[in-house]
Structure formats: C-alpha cells, structure tokens
Image 1 (cartoon, rainbow, N blue to C red):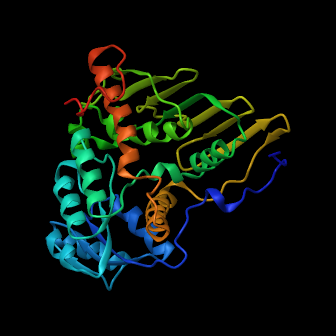
Image 2: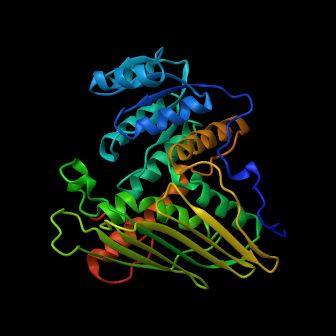
Length: 357
C-alpha cells in the first residue's frame, strides 16, 4: 500500500455501528465519566432506555440531560429484571462491579464493563467462562483503542503498511493533580494502574502475535509532591525481537504533550500533540512521508467505538475485539508492571494474578 501525500484517510479507523441490530441498552452507574458514555451513545443513536445509580438523583440528572424518556432506578436488579433490555453498560468501580457483571450475564444481558475489568485474573477468567456458559458477549470499555491516532495506527499495523513492528514508544506528559481530594487519590498506583491500563492495552495491539517476555517498571514522586500516589511512572516491555516503553509524567504544568512512535520494518509512524485529544500524525515509508487528516477525538469517540464494537460483534455472532478474554492479557501486563515497581525487578506477565495492593 503506497501512501499518497496529504491524503484524507478512509473511515475505517472511525467508530462503527451495527447495520440493523438496535437493542435496548441499560446503564448501571452514573458517575462523572458517564457524561462521555451517554454523549457518545446519543450521537450514535444507540437506544438507552434505563439508567441506574445508588444515588437516584444522579440517574435522574443523566436521564434528563441525555435520554429523558429512560427509566431510572437505584437498584440494578430492577434494571436487570427488564427482559427487553439486551445490553448493559456497567460503569461502577471494580469491587462493586464484579457481582453486577455476574448478575447481568445470568439475566441474559450482553455486558460492556468499565475498565479496569477486574482486580484478580482468576475472577476475570471465571466471568469469561460464565459469559461462554450463558452465550453472552462480555466486553471491556478500552475506549483508547478508538482514539483517532491510536485507531489509525492499529489499522496501519493490521494492514502491514509499517511491516513488522519492532519498537513502540509512548509518552504522556500532563498534569494529573486534579485528583487531589477525590477517591482517586487513595489509589496507590494511580498512574501505573488506573491511568496506564489504557496504554498497556493499546501497546498490545501494535504487536499482533507477539508475547511480552518481561516487564520492568518503576515509579517516583515529584519534588515536594503533596499528592499521595507517585506521579512519575515508566515501564519497559521486552519481546523476543521487539521492545516498547511507556512513560508517564503526570505533574507537567507547562508545555504538556503526548506522543507515540511506532517503528516497523517497512515504515515509521509518529503522532504528537498537546494532549490525548489533539494529535497530528505522520507516516513515512519508502513512498515518502504522509500526514493524514484525522477526524474525531478520543472523548467521546472512544465510547462510541467500544459500544459500537460490542453491538457489531453481537450482530455478527462473533467475539468482540475488546472481549474480557482479550482484556485479561492487558491486565496481566499492568499487574506485572505494578509488581515490578513494588519489587524493583522485572516480572513475567501472567505470574501476578492479583493487583498488588
């Protein structure tokens, strides 16, 4: 595939919607991030008919803002009792989410789970098996895969345009100190786990068929840092014939930027911007450099992407590309990185079954 200069890319990398499958959808958990979920679903014309939150007023507010005709509940069991609802989006925190996912599958619903999927790989495997037993599709909301620059890069990798990828280096340099005083401040590995799970998942998609041999990670604190979780984190992933690095500087007040570099045997891709929402991308192969014009933004397009992929998978009778089974591999990388930061030595992915506390 030769790359024409200044071409406008095809719509392949954009979020998809099913052709004719139009199920009723229920949302369980109406926290702050669900503004992005519901905004994307409304734009995509997905049918959200019910919302649930333990604080009923939150469910009412979300319904009024996005889907005024939706039913509202404070007990998720009542939402699951509605047999006309085929798909549920579960956005609660991991500990509370586990029994809700199980109940949803047993009630015959397809499930989109918020990330991180689980805190224990064995519990995750049990849910994967339950989904198989109930013939339901269980997917994980790894919405970063549909950030335009990441999605475009995935398509180029899958098409072979860049050849075989042997290096991927991703860096985020931003200010995450907005979490001060929120429950997020109580997460010890806020950056390496809660934030970086997107990047552990995304980097896997750049190396199809390759297995990470070892993970080495570390964390540090900013000078005079008051926030409890370390705001500096890094991880190196070792393959048999490739390498990847993830760098997170979460205390950058000025000159923030975000970048991705993929090097393959046939070409190189570089994406860079002031944040994860605004990216400029350049591809260079033997045909010369190419700077495609990207459309969309991670928020809210990523949330259209995940729900759309789940609905397309259900319509087509296949497992989704963001299945819980696949996501366990991303979690294995993340858990290994956290363990490595704790132990100060490389860790083999899959050897750490639970998120280190």
